[in-house]
Amino acid sequence: MAKVLITGIAGFIGSSIARGVLKENGTVRGIDNLSTGKEENIEDIRSSIDFRFADVTDAHEMENAFREVDYVFHQAAIPSVPVSVADPLGTNAPNLTGTLCVLEAARRAGVKRFIYAASSAAYGDSLDLPKRESMAPAPISPYAVQKVAGEYYLASYARVYGLQTVALRYFNIFGPRQDPTSQYSGVLARFISQMLEGEAPTIFGDGTTSRDFTYIDNVVSANLLAAKAPSCVSGKIFNVGIGQATTLFSAYQQIRSLVNYDGDLRWKPEREGDIKHSVADISSARALLGYNVVTDFATGVRKTIDWY
Ligand code: UD2
Image 1 (cartoon, rainbow, N blue to C red):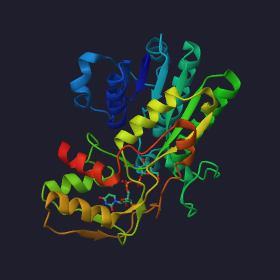
Image 2 (cartoon, rainbow, N blue to C red):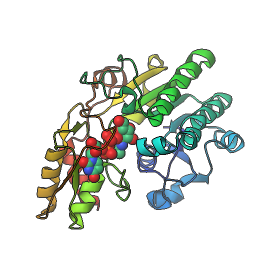
Image 3 (tube, protein in one colour):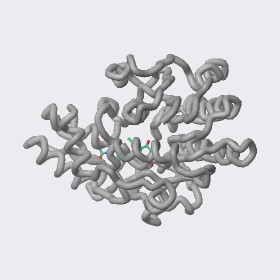
């Protein structure tokens, strides 16, 4: 699958894409500033990749890193809504300036295609379900604004400079290597690690909040397909989810029975800014990328538990 550059390669998603590319006999170069990524995430593939400690906002480093690259998977970001709320300016640098820096490096290097980790945060708290790419963006948090602005930069680079771009709006992604330790970590990573440790998990809200929990293998597949799809996909945005909502209480129950947890469950008021329901319409990704769900929710949960 040719030469690939992955930004944020030491992250949960970036390192998983790297494994996917290596499986297809691609050559992987990866950059990470290790701000949220961890070297242990790439330990097993370190000798098979060209890893460079670098920051996506460093234009000079990016110029070097992008030499002789065919495809770019831009995953580097501070992927946190609450962190962006606490520090809008500080997160704008990696999340938006960083995207512009790597787009510029990609344009100068003449890469074949640029694939971007966009976010379902673009839809805001619209109750119109499922979320379709044709809906007007309604970003609420600074993080959402940064991610949507990145999409517009991609569309601009596609139109103005003829760079081939694809934006993938990730819905709640989970799987092995996702960091469970922060209070803002993905809820499934938290539930699984807490119940395995015998700690009581907490549900914020009444348990009916739902998400399109998407196992990482689906995301890896979507990225590889986005690189290979015909050029008519360029400049477009695609939802990446499984198209099925699971409530927090149902997720809790399923994990509880799989790990044989018999402890308590804590309830707390809904987190401020939480949206109630989120589920993706994946028909566009199916039609144009050839995307299909490769791992369903229950299988993904089992695989994640097995990894711990
Ligand atoms: C997801 C993304 C975020 C952004 C956002 C856009 C993850 C990890 N985060 O945030 O980057 O794209 O979507 O809307 O995918 N919860 C509990 N107990 C816990 C932790 C969380 O009940 O211990 C609840 C939380 O209040 C929320 C739901 O679980 O209602 C999902 O929370 P999350 O942090 O996993 O993901 P989300 O949807 O807020």
